Amino acid sequence: MTAEKDQQPTSGKISHLKLIGPLVTPYRRYIGIALLLLALGAAANLAIPVAFKQMIDLGFSAENKDTLSYYFVVVLLVSSAMVIFTSLRYFWVSWIGQKVVTDLRKKVYEQVMKQSALFFESTKTGEILSRINTDTTLVETVVGSTFSIALRSAVTFIGAVVMMVVSSHKLAGYIALMIPLVVLPIVVVGRKIQKLSKIEQDRIADSSAMATETINAIATVQAYAQETKENNAFSGAINKAFEASVDSIRMTTIMSIIVGLVIFGGIVTVLWLGATDVINGLMTAGTLSQFVMYAIMAATSTGALTTVWSELKKAAGALERIVELMNTQPDIVDTPEVTELTVPIIGNLSLKQVQFAYPSRPERAVLNDLNLEVPAGQTIAVVGPSGAGKSTLFQLLMRFYEPQSGDIYLDGKNIKDYRIQDLRAQFALVAQDVTIFSTTASLNIAYGIDQATEQQIKKAAQLAHADEFITQLESGYDTYLGERGVRLSGGQAQRLSIARAIITEPPVLLLDEATSALDAASERLVQEALSDIMKDRTTLVIAHRLATVRQADSIVVMDQGCIVAQGRHEELLESSPLYCELARLQFSG
Image 1 (cartoon, helix red, strand yellow):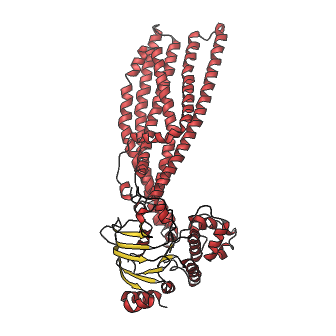
Image 2: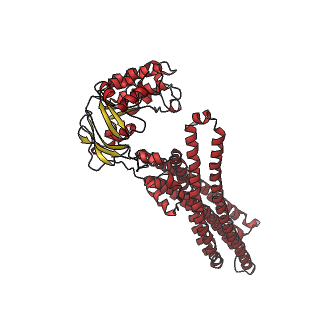
Image 3: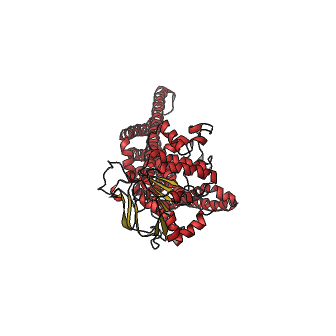
């Protein structure tokens, strides 16, 4: 699923609702309870007109007082039972709906977590969130409400029709003639509602994606005083969602009007015919009243089913979008031959004739026939101009992307032969753009391992020179750091990310210009922390500062996806014109 694909209209099918089946299967027992309550409630509801028939035919006279009282008590008891059964059914059906949508959101989220970098490169965050929240809410409405109404209405309709036939074959026959007039608009207009509902969900997703992107970049928006521009853009997007929603509502309204006019016009006609039979002595007044009550039940149920059909069409559109996501398979997966890692990784890295271009830009090669050997325990610095392929190298090592040709080895084994989780666990990445989660300092440090002890967390923080500022926070290690770590300075956030890398004790450390955006004081502290954890550990560092380059065992100079030189700092100053220029521009002063 890509952003481009989301703009292409697709036709939702009511058959997509069958996908709800596996979601409700684990709750068969509760569904059975709900169905039993549904049957009891419907039976109680259908029994009420029979009691009223007896009362009407009996007549409201003094001599029938005791018998009438008996029937009124029966009506009260039956009505009370109907209320109790209906309320209990509502509880269980709503409970099932909440459980199903909870399970569905988990499945959708797990599916998103499996996707590769290509998916997130081409899909907006807001679009993903719309799948997880808005679309699944529509499914919850179907399971927790719409299906319940549909079953209740269907059972009531069938029961009412049977009792109408029992009450009067003649009048029931007249009613039957109206059925095609009711079904036809439901089918025709329902198809249009289905398409409009899909468009409506797409427009809502567009506005959600726009809001997410703007809020994440709020500092930039405000810095450039573009609030009005963004407000206008969002207003345009949300207005499109409103217009799509109104189109869907309009079609639903049209269908309700047509069905309603046909149903109640037919009932009035049948009433007139029935009244004529009563006058002619062919039917009792009680029988006619009973028939009318059942006809009203059938009409009300039909109206409810009309609305239900509209809701099911909307849910089918939402499910189509969810199915689209659930059917999106990651392009990087474990092969069937992979086995679980059983021996410790030493950290030998080897790249052989690696050729790579990003899938979104296949015509532009980022790495060209790259060959590189990184012995275990050594620090290799990678330098080069912007666009040389340095950061891409890290992404390939961790299998965020696959090279179009060539192979990458870790300890002599092709990285494709490791389980993805095992492979990535061998690396710790410290990037220039730090990710801080909106939780505590302690949980941020322990993010990479399960059940870290307080001692492990504190030791990692001390090695990263982060303990000194963490202990000064109001709640120490339990201090909430805010959205994306807004309460930390750049240097503090970077040291916290280093502590996160340290605690995992990775065989291979990847440093992507980890100090380039820091001030001199913060850089010194971060550099000290990095120097400590780089000892005796395989380290690849995209270098920006002279200090890091000079400490490296070897420096790799990249340009246009190729390695153009390799050696020590002093050697490269003499042998590589590109390195000399980089040193002059980036490392002088």
